[in-house]
Image (cartoon, rainbow, N blue to C red; front, side):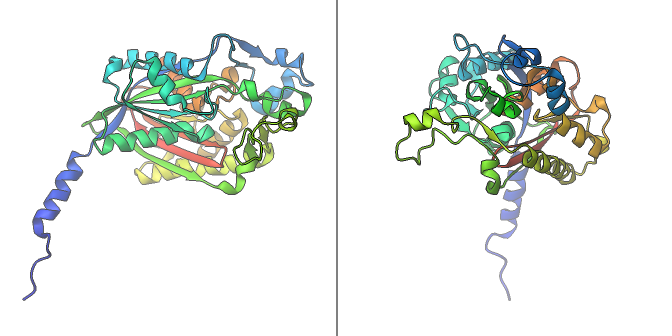
Length: 352
């Protein structure tokens, strides 16, 4: 006579109890900060061979924010956004027990921006993790925070995207295709454990390193005989390099794929989406994706017209603004989607 499996029914019961005890993570507060310095297309016409019409037609951008070197840093902008998010969440800063910080433009080569934010918030001792996934960085950070909460390791996590891109742009005629697009700013969200049947339903992360050099900043890279030299400083390798056509072609495909992936995993259709918040890369890309999914204007949130492409900060800035404007309400199904350098792409489906 065969004996019962070594774990018996008790093992199955334990697994069921563990499944029932898994927490969900819920966004309970959002905030953002953008520099006061507004740079219009007319301002750019004065320093490079471009026009307002050329920029708007190709990107949809009318103005953007560039930082003030005497005032703004990646970490102090993040502090302001986090304080707004915490106030809206009605949560004391001392209740935060972890930070996940997405940026590719940290204040220092090292340490990361997360510890500088931790210091400014007076949270010495808690963990801080930096994520370097460019435009997809915030969703990657959200996914990591979501996993920490689901495992029960942490209860309240700050998820941040903050960037200063303007200081690395080539503002000559040669660099205009990228310098008219990128900008500075910060967005933040407070993620909290909940027993309620809502919150982050799923996250989906992808990458393809074959296209790493189609959107990148090469230097200061460590794999050089001399990390800094006169030749390097006189060259263009410290400026952002972008193959715009390749980025556009891949972005429109990957956006569609990763949004569908999120919907299918959770048993929803495009008609169930209450608001799509795409990474603010280019208004043409957002409009293309909107047409693919046949979503009405009121179901897609764009603010690239006013802020440009703020890389990892674009989604949390947009999410914070959408909430401010009453476009995100309790119970809404929100879809976040991003594509960026790496190439990386990601999505998240959230029941608010």
